[in-house]
Image (cartoon, rainbow, N blue to C red; front, side):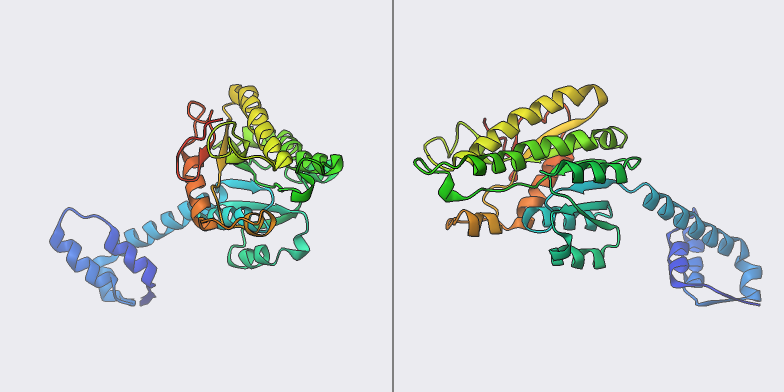
Length: 306
């Protein structure tokens, strides 16, 4: 009789703790062999069965872990910080619901899905209530551990200076950056409540603060108004959902080198890599509790004054 014994099972044999170190060393040598003869089995049969039993246990645990994987929903996940959030959580093994307005053009998301089949790409315009409702209906019974309201726009710079205000552009920025986050939060709050982690996060900016580096800078009226409003309403959401155990927090990316900062805002100063910015924000998200999530946290871990 010859039994096949694969390398993974062999490694398990070497991992089993035995009280007799001499026997342990001998058995590790036996387990490294690729076949087991009848004579081997007569001598070491009980141990081989122990190895195979351990393998079955590990596989069962892996299966259970996959079934209980945490889920994150990210808005605006096709580029920039949203894409980095999707990549980081996919690398963690999470189920990632990555949303964007035009999935057909989301080539980077498609590439991420090839690497991580647990990434689900969904169409979502956060200003379109019918799309929000449709996606919420699709995931009605799916717990969502973490909702990241990342989708946002800067708005046209030329329409945000004194003498050239445009009401429609103001409404577009506020609809996307404020009402969009509120509408998505409202639609998926029950999914978050039903989850294990129970966290909702929104992306703010230092531009929304009344103090700090922007207190002596003018302009960019719509964007900074939207982030100030976002800070206020998300704090209110946190108060309303506290009784359900939900943690609501705000994170800021710093001067992350995204298309929005470089191309839309025309920023020329020093920038932090998007991956570094997101890694810092995820660290803050990991640490959020109902006791410490009342202030926005910058990617570097520093609390932002309002």
